[in-house]
Amino acid sequence: MANKFYITTPLYYVNAPAHIGHSYTTVAADVLSRYKRMSIGKENVWFLTGTDEHGQKIKKAADEAGLAPQEFTDKISVQFRELWAKLNISYDDFIRTTQERHVRTVERALEILYRKGDIYEDKYEGLYCTPCETFWLKSQVKENLCPDCNGALDKIKETNFFFRISRYQKWLIDYLQDNPGFIAPPSRYEETLSFLRRNTLNDLCISRPKERLSWGIELPFARNHVTYVWFDALINYISAVGEFDENARYVSCLWPASLHLMAKDILRQHTVYWPIMLRALGIELPKKVFAHGWWLINEGKMSKSKGNTVNPLEMIELYGLDAYRYFLLRDVPFGLDGNFSQEGIIKRYNSDLANDLGNLVYRTLTMVEKYFDGCVPSVDLEKEVSDSNALNIIARVKGIKNEVSLKLDELNFSLALEAIWGLISLANKHIEETKPWNLLKEGKTQQLKVFIRLLVFVIREVAVQVYPFMPGTSESILEQIGEDKIKKGQPLFPRLLT
Ligand code: MSP
Image (tube, rainbow, N blue to C red; front, side, top):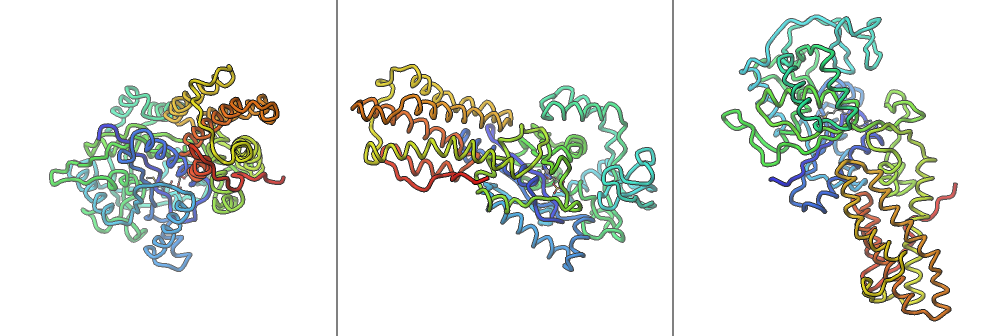
């Protein structure tokens, strides 16, 4: 498909329930998918998400829950799906790394690389962090502690299989230099490139002996080993949408992905390991990798171990789904870190949603009801509007789709919303300045008709533009404010008491 959009989220680990951080990436991917479906057609968009179910972390969580790993992952994976349903996530496919289609592709990829000589067996002796499933060099470590999680490292001596990534370092540097748009935002591109320029890549250990870890995909050429969880998980992006044929050629009508979305914590896996894996397999690279920032709690990272995670279900219970989706994408520029607080949501809710959008819709509905018996007056705006304020508003309505598109194509969600809210403010200001109650008193019926028609015109366009962000709200507005008739419902965003 020439003009298609294939977008992915990370596959989330099923060792713990999802928190607002996971929902952030997934909601962002949902907004982009909905926007693209509107602009290039439903049939050209493919939105993939899913769960990462192998490895030590998952095995440990299953043991703690007293369940067999498969049973445990079945259970948590369903919880993710249920959460995405509640958050109105319109994914097209949900992949689990325990699914047969995925396992098959991982095995084929391993075989192909092994035959090619890109995977080789070697003795390994070194320091290993079990929770992070990462090997560390002596030079990277201080006081035997993991540089990532600060936990104690284990000394390990064993035979393993290695992926010859060192062979591809120069190629990757050249590729990045030639394709600066491959990694976004630009700060992440710089980060990756300077990492590659400053360090020599060590070959990646892609196996774990089964006696140490049984919960994984076996290496087809060494059944006493399982595949390293990252090697396994990254393959999902291709295993979900295609297959290797008998000549070891990867065939898919959706690949390459248009966009891999994630947070900065897993940038390197996606901008170093993954491109090299694809290159070694003779597969085209994705078009773009975008790493956004983190939601922090009191300026610190959220984590299960700190016990400071926020449950998205609680947030939507308190503030409603669309207010939550709006807040996530409006409050912090995509790419930067942000501090999550309920005061922050309440502030946005009351000002942007209750005051600006909610009021505009409610006031307009009330006026149509009161002045015109619920029928939207039919007026040819092009012919009847002459005052400069109204003309300006019409121009803004006509330009808004373009403005929003430009921002969304750059993944600049907050500016896209700002543009829509600019129009909402203009309409609210127009109401205050026009003082429709006076028009009525003075018997200026035609002016009143034009005025109402213009508001309906604005609101219906606003509803279309907010659709990717707040699908439910958009539908409700369009239902309440029809082309010709209204059907007034409850206020969209009743003010929250603070
Ligand atoms: N299983 C791997 C990914 C494999 S992808 C082939 C993994 N899983 S994870 O469950 O830890 O999810 C990490 C991702 O969750 C982040 O990259 C980001 O998309 C999202 N987030 C987790 N915590 C987050 C925040 N505090 N803030 C923003 N996003 C966060 O890594």
